[in-house]
Image 1 (tube, rainbow, N blue to C red):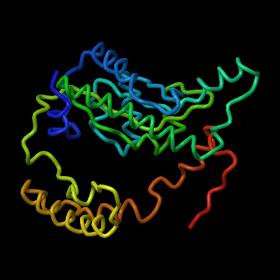
Image 2 (image 1 turned 180 degrees about the vertical axis):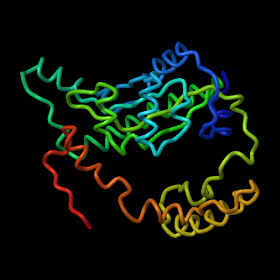
Image 3 (image 1 turned 135 degrees about the horizontal axis):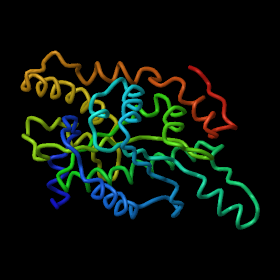
Length: 255
């Protein structure tokens, strides 16, 4: 198994899957990742591993038809699961869990899901297994929940496609650059100007990276952000979460 520094230095999403991964390795990896930090020891995340081809194809369609979901060995679905809390609260005093009606449930649940999902990815890549995060499960969380048999006070949040790849070692040109460290990391005090200036600099840096790869026609950072961050790109997510039993006391205020 590779060391964590090497994994992070080479880390990129993998989409060219071929052949099957040993699912016992995936199971053992998820079991180890279960030790990841979580808020208040709530352990409010569950993981569903999906391997059936027909289900993978359905998930792919929900995610804009992404081919690497169809060709992966396993799809790991990370679920915000408050059935666990509801069960023990009922056991303790006959009450019911209520956090699902507060925005904190989505915030803390998303953080916990992201933490454990990142542990899974790093552990798998350290073993030479390819991964790709899939946020598009939120395009239709009701359909994904039905497909995965999710019931009660629980909702899907994100997924990871897991598959066999030729190598995890990547040429530096394959690793997409990040914003300058000076516009990302601050000691003692945040600097908004550095963040803004760093974003503009990164737009040029990313354009040059695409050109070096022979993909100069690719979207710039600015164009990508304009497409996704000037408006809600999953406008029905709020009502879908309410349909799943979350945020019942909230009303969406359209801007």
